[in-house]
Length: 266
Image 1 (tube, helix red, strand yellow):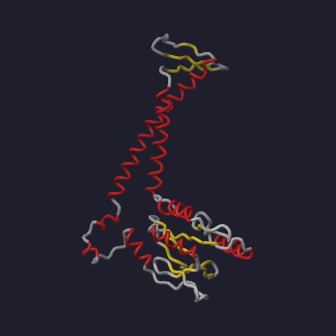
Image 2 (tube, one colour; image 1 turned 180 degrees about the horizontal axis):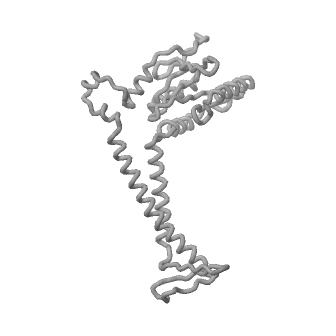
Image 3 (cartoon, rainbow, N blue to C red; image 1 turned 180 degrees about the vertical axis):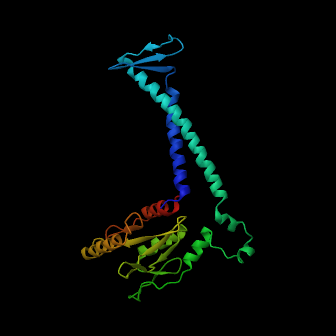
């Protein structure tokens, strides 16, 4: 879910692009004005310029493109004016919105005074710190022989999961490995990665499917995805996946781009 600031900044960008396109058309637009005369069964168009009569020059059907260009020009002029007002209004709103951010009151406090505060409005940094400090019991490891450990010192089940965990850590994306999630019917599952999406403070899930060339494994994957869907955890919304086969390994470049796009872009 996008934050209000993100939505408004995206609208500002959209409006600025719209204005740029309109201004490019205006630079090539014809001068003069259009007079429209509505008859009983047809419409007549007259062009009024510096060298025309008071009523203007009649525009024949062969020159109808001139009519369209003048109408487009008039619209573009209004569009630019209205869009500028909207951009200014959004910019001013965002300025005041930032000034009245409740988390700013906390940030401005002396660090020693912060320790004495009882606050219900945590800064993003404090929220992440508390979220990551939660203790939990993950899924049991049956194979005690092989140990694959992440940069954070967590034990994971595969080299690919280590790659994902280390990449999340490197990008500063808060995560928990195999944090228990209770679904409908008191069914407990352990998503590979529970990720804290900021600044929304929303928990989403990343599953790695490492044996997609195994038919039985794929059946289990489909069952797991269906279970998530029944609990309104939809693929591409709150659930994201990576996958590989024996011949097609995890693409680290694609992984990096995906994680940056999903969790680092604002």
